[in-house]
Length: 317
Image 1 (tube, one colour):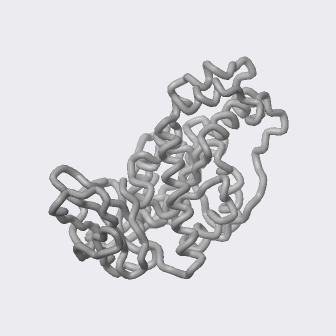
Image 2: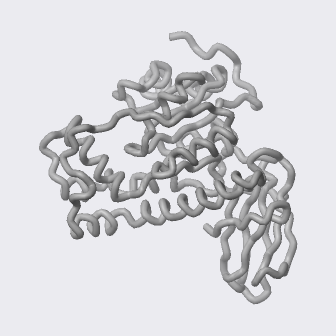
């Protein structure tokens, strides 16, 4: 196989990144993406959908830089069952998207798929308790607060999610059905209360992540429906009232003005224009000048961080 078609430059970037989490409708999304975009896939060394260039440069010669050269030169989308951090340096973080799904339904769907296509001898409880099957969504996405990712789709709200993704990323993704298992070994509606509790107990991180993704989706779709710009970011409240976070707009590099509010009254005004030195593998806009920091005099955790330009409330990480 020949090498990259073009020399990589600092300004070069892939078209985007799709972190495909298993059993979240990802196959139909990938197939829709492939209809109009160049796509490079990484589904593991033995994955039948893994692109030849990935097999050669990542798994055979173990040369990750060549992978990045190739994907950027092709202006391709990078898609697959990899952790977000794996290819985070390929794109501006606003051009990353993924889908998450309600954890109980996703786990049951994963079990049914594995039993039909991988190991017909799987029993439910051993499958659920296997470490590699637990908190898979959080393990794939846990390297960056959800509010910083370009788009976090929700499988149960796939129509609305695709509207948001297409609007931000210029894609033409459509709802379709693919990889549906017609021979389900275990329908979700037949789960016992004990099994549901077992899934919840062993997937607490996934449940927390899903609830955050759902809250983020509802807030974002409301802004989208009203024609308001979206602001990515998060904030944290540390010891002695130390408040810190980042904020940047989805569709511009204008600096974000923020208000620290309590009971609707503005206590402080901030601008997200400081250098951000965390999450070093990710490519943030404004050359990383997206951070803000202050101290709340009384350390009150009830304060809200509001985007002055739109009234959007940032979610606390």
